[in-house]
Length: 327
Ligand code: ASP
Image 1 (cartoon, rainbow, N blue to C red):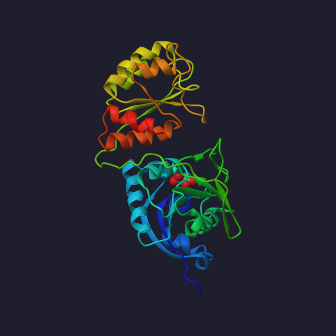
Image 2: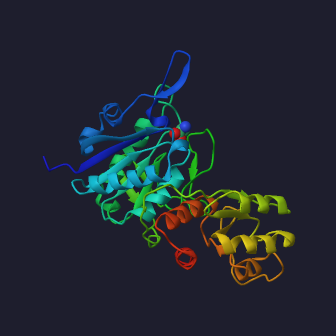
Image 3: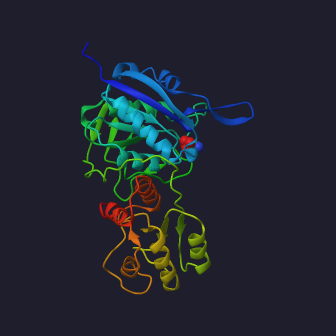
């Protein structure tokens, strides 16, 4: 029998690892070993080793946890053909994006998750783990960077987002879509992921405090004043359209940007911030002239991860601007 690929499965928590008992509606009870044991079909695909890294609902994961998961994945990759990380769905997109910034290896790093607990009818964890191991073990995934495999779809880690709160088909990479799929035992890539985002490192220490503030029609001066007084390390603004804010808020935001990095992203969910199309007060040209940093194609959540990592690695304002210029 030809040698099977070696895949290391790292567990971090999430619904995939939860089971309800009695009146408790679901606690973290399954480690990587139990998750793998529930899928006997793995045996035919890969020689799987399991490691428990964390056991948390994903809304409780910190930037330091993301860095820890990244280090564990890189360490596992030294003795494996592929690495699978089981994770909560709620902040899967932040970890997928964070790992894409923090790792640069040929060995596939494949995140997977479940929308239904292991004890629920139609639990999707075992099928997702099986598909994730197939992808991690495949030669086709080598060099593809960080991937998310869920619901038989393969997504580029930097693009994915959770776009439904409870159904099993909860993820999309809109407006682009998945880059491949798993059909029976076949791993198919239809698209090649774009060049990876800039490589960053987690400098350690206290994770920087970076709130996200979404504006709509109007942004009150009181809100900007609260941001200035809040003791934050930086701010992400999620703005209408291509990055536009109420004219009255622009001068205050400019003063805020003299004190800390203020990054603005488009709240539309697709496209990117423009840089040279509108010049009215509160437009993207005005905000950039006042020192705010356009997030380019990053949405507010991804911008937050990038800014936290930039701050944690000690980037000054000019270096932070240069990092965002890379997106
Ligand atoms: N609460 C879960 C989490 O850890 C949700 C899930 O995994 O679907 O993100």
